[in-house]
View 1: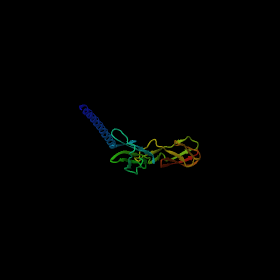
View 2 (view 1 turned 135 degrees about the vertical axis):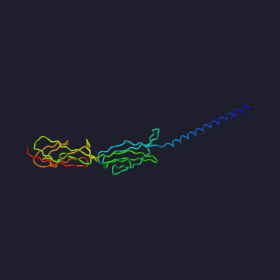
View 3 (view 1 turned 30 degrees about the horizontal axis):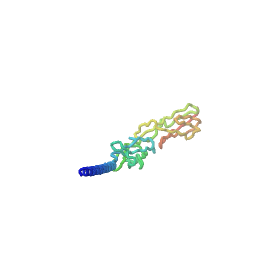
View 4 (view 1 turned 30 degrees about the vertical axis):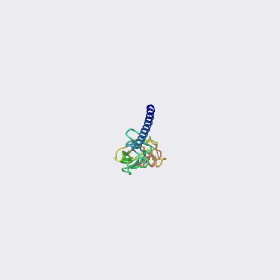
Length: 209
């Protein structure tokens, strides 16, 4: 009789242990699912940092990464974008920033209650200055290098900006891409110097050698 009681108790204990194990497993699984559901971004990282745009219409694509403190990226989450001054630099829904006028502005990325900001500088050519703006060349003489500089909004020279040259009358004055001019025939012509949407003209008079 005692043997039967012991066996019965053992069977009940085994079933109880199995039930507890299943309950524990279910609880742990539920806890894991709840923790997984709680995972969410806690900050936004924007790349590239502090972009600088130097040509009108030039654009740069910003990437806003939703991340948590462990460095996990949430690729399905998307930020919304705004520009503090859209007349300087506009930003679209995809984070594409376009330069419009010279100045500084701030681009903000937002997701839920999170936000991040980066400064954007737009440094365009505001004018071109030729020195001198009138020049006399002689027919068949050595070429003369024209001196033209690009100026920013502060009036200072912007080095290494692309300046393009064209002649209003190539049969009288020839100009190369580097700004060197040759007098070919007697007469007058204008050399147009351009950078982005800015232009200045240099009056050239060609005389006999």
